[in-house]
Amino acid sequence: MIQINKPLDVIIKAAGKQKYSGGSLRFFTYLQTCDSPDGLLLYNLMTREFLLLDNVEAKSFRNIDTSNDSVRYLIENWFLVPTEFDDYLLYKQTDTVFRLLAVNDKSPLTTFVIYPTTDCNARCFYCFELACKRTNMTAETARDVADFILKKSCGKRVHIMWFGGEPLYNALAIDIISNRLNDAGLEFGAEMVSNGYLFDEALVKKACSEWKLKAIQITLDGTEQIYNKTKAYIYKDVSSPFIRVLDNIELLCNAGVKVKIRLNMDMYNYDDLKHLSTQLAERFSSYENCVVYVALLFENVGKCYTERTDEVKQILIKKQNEISEILNSYGMYRKSNLMIYRQVNQCMADNCKSTTILPDGSLGRCEHYTDGEYYGSIYNDAVDMSVIRKFRERSLKADKCRTCNLLTKCYTLKACPIAETHCDDIDKELKIDQVKKEMINSYDLFKKNKVKAQEEHEEETQFMS
Image (cartoon, rainbow, N blue to C red; front, side, top):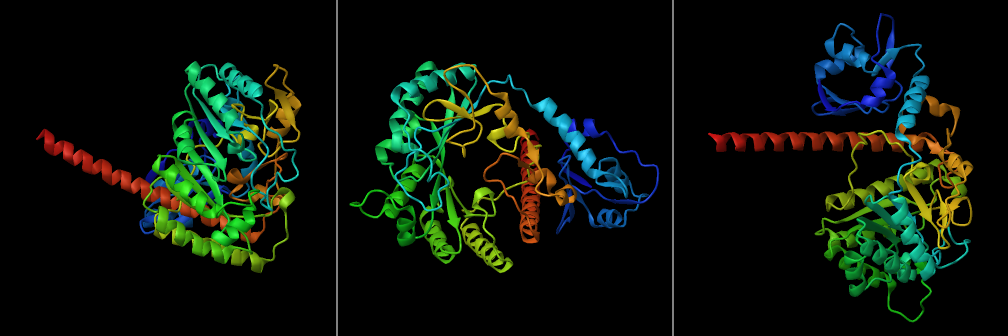
């Protein structure tokens, strides 16, 4: 048995080691298995322990042979439990302890999602902010935002996410905040969600040097004709926005910014995105700092819930996988590994170290709430704890979630406006497939690192001799 990742100490201390005194056993509910050429991979989603069993050990595990040393270890560490054991109760108990130790409302704020504006130069039909009020942050408010960051960060390095609307639609506010933080000597790094249209060579240079821009997400909806139609930019007398955005992506890549290109896919554009993925690969595959991924539009979430037939879902998943394989063949698809640490937060909404800052200085918990649900303001220290507690409250989609082995990765916040409200067999199959891919990717990385360490050891030994 090879331990690829150790269990989390805090979870093991909360759960304790399982003591077995006989009786029938079964596999732990929150366990995922995956076959590999070297044996059987086991991932405990509660403790985060990740193991490889050789073929002999795997056989003993499947047969639950309690005379085998590896099986006894697996019993002690919650991979196997008594038949009548309440797995969900154990998970809830360990999760409660974990969060009590991890959450500290007095921690400095270190992540700030800032809206320079809620306005945008595009009119995408699917935008969740279409009905929101369009406002810009004033120069005075921008200065006050910078002072708020300096005060609340307590001198610790901070991370800034520029969000919107289109952040570049009010670049002046970004200038003021960034320059004020630079002048104060505060260390910070930034990323941005943008359509990329308003960049040019000079602005990219400024973004890297003054705004400390490290990464950016840019969404593409298709090849030139479909992209231009979908984005529906407000400018009517310009050349192709599609060509301009691709040129700007190249400028950003050359400047060393990590560019994450998101391909929004639905029934209307999935064939076109296949062509786009090849086009992007031919142009950007040489850039290690450029990755592309595919996201399904209107996936049964929140207000965007739409009933999809099984047939349509299967088509979309197949097409999504086809595009991912094309990108993967060019080395552009973002491979994900297992989350080896226990996630304290679902997102920034329940993270005590994060906040959103709206154009008027209002403070919120979630970037998807721009017209309400504020818990405070940059202009005073009053905090509405009822709002903060609301965004920390968790919920199960259904009672059946208690016995789903993906529960620890799939919980939702009750107030989340875009949380999945439904999960059927196809959704679950897709999520399980993703976890298995992560297990294989993580094991491959483990093997590569092991080989590299061995080679370095051999080189050092030869040098010493």
